[in-house]
Image 1 (cartoon, rainbow, N blue to C red):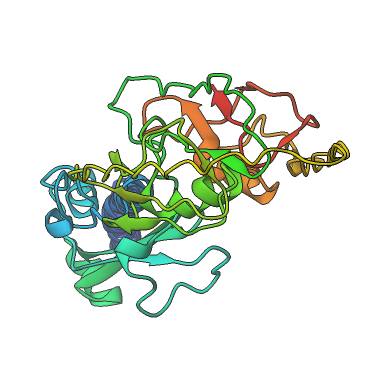
Image 2: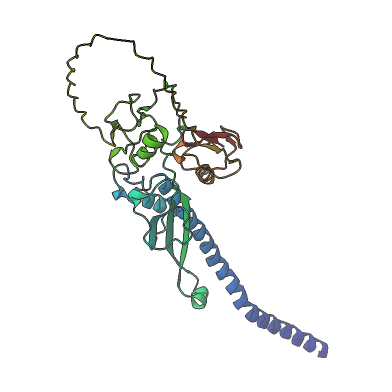
Length: 352
């Protein structure tokens, strides 16, 4: 009987010990489980916010003026930054969204930045997104509060030459051989063949074609030139030829006929014949500036475009064969690195 009583007491003591241990460990187990639930939700929400900011910056760098559906023609949903960010959040409602353009080289993205109409190739397109996050477990609400704000931002280099439809490879422009004009004469370029942006009209007219005048422009900076007052391939005086370019078709006035001068009578030569004039040698043309092609293999497309511009080449002559919404790493480039080519007229294509 005594042995049975002892065994009964031991069993009861062990049961009580188990209850005490369970009571001690239960709060820790609940904290771990509840914390794991909210931590996992916060992690996946953070990934969604980061992807939304990157998608907005990447799309805006190709269409800077389409920050919202009010950006102009072609900016209706979903073809604008705001719509792309909202779609990437997949049902999460942002509490704040900031879309700005900053000059190249900016490191602190504060202030209002540049006007979207003045956002040029090489500038930085910055998008920041804030999303409220609500904790669902009571224990975590008591520890850190009922709600948090998850934020992310992203920056991309503006490169508006990537505006071909999705899945369409961008064409490599070819320049047909042109006859060499006489000294003092230049050939009018074809602004619509590129196509050339309004903001690049000065560079093409003066630096590439060699004219000394300034073209008159009609349209926003990022619009393509579709009309020019002087036909392409016209040979004209470099120092005096004027031109107007426009992003919309315009009427070309008919030139007034130039009256023919009345020929003067040829005087009869008298005396000794005149000496044969000594021919004046033609001036030696100034060679075009040369730049060295950088190595862009293994770099992202946006980084490669920046390297191309930093090397002194024209940013509008950089092309990538790819869908416009995939910033892949460059696997090949059409011109080998280290090659010396003309800075203003050389074009390059990169591929994955």
